[in-house]
Image (cartoon, rainbow, N blue to C red):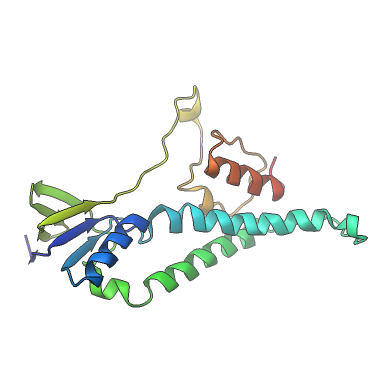
Amino acid sequence: MGETLTPDICVIGAGPGGLSAAAAAAAFGVPTVLIERDKMGGDCLNTGCVPSKALLAAAKRAEAIRGAAVFGLEVQNIRVNFAKVHEHVHSVICSHRARRFGGAILPDLAFGSSRAHAQFKDARTVTASDIEIRARRFVIATGSKPAIPVIAGLDGGPFLTSDNIFDLKERPAHLIIVGAGSVGLELAQAFRRLGVR
């Protein structure tokens, strides 16, 4: 094992909850370590709120153009360039990431690699890469992942989740959205307005 850190608080997970906890502790001068195994910002920034709202914004414009005739505007055959929509969504993610992580918070809090996997060694020690963190308190803010439903035949073909649907660079011809929660409804509306059956 390499270096050993001894902060008061070790926060595992750099999504909205973990970042808020780490920032609040650091603001009070509490020695804090922040560990994230994936992308900083968690679900909201990378696979949730931010990309879905960017996709919805593009879809809203497409729908507005289709409905322009009621205002006396004649629009011929709207064409959705899905690769450009993908670029738009990811540019919004990058912009938010730069605003959130481009300055003050990470240099003061971050433990290093944003890709470190935290693992408890014992009740007071976490390892991440080759570093041991012995903290007085731990905050576990690791978020969640989409649950894959048990549907006959689903495992035999390709399927998307909210974790990878924003990686699409080509518009699919059709989609079936399973689940009518906020994420499912946003995705169904956006893809329908972008011309997906």
